[in-house]
Length: 273
Image (cartoon, rainbow, N blue to C red; front, side, top):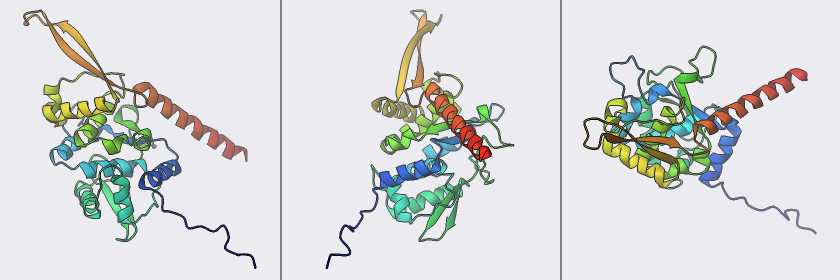
């Protein structure tokens, strides 16, 4: 008698990074959106620092990484996984224990940034509005929501290449600041000693974050000498910063245009049936 079970082999569980990549593909977006108010309060606010700076001060690295993952998987609203699998997806470079994951969820709940669903065995995470109001989440491009200047995107490449895993809290924070500040212009110029005033991030932390991005070949800099009558030389340096591809302004705009074209093609195909 031939073996009726020939060719049937046990499968291995997906590695955390592979599972995360599969989920990102299933989300069919290619990027996550993040409202600018999470990084910085509007121009007319009495104080410009926002939730990001507060999370950096509170050393909530796992919580920040988890928020970015929740936003990246926002389209999979019915997704529920064991807490241990969530923790593994956060800890592909530095282990994240179930306790640390639980603490990160609690921190995001306290900030009214996520809502948990499901059970303790199969947990789902749904983002709330990024301003910490606790309001239901809507995509920034949805009808009735602010568009254009009100948000920026985070390409999935940041996850697929492991960049977000390798960055520590200063690097994560400054990556978001760079994305925020290059949404409308390809480069930006904010002196280190102004970071606390604008973003609630100390000069030392900002410098560490920039150095992390430089080490990952994500950040580009250009020092420009400008006139300064009060200096002995009559000049002073200012540093312009920009992100490298695939995170540059041009690359992100192309990513968004490609996504819009894909949606239009799908809608055209659906109406033709």
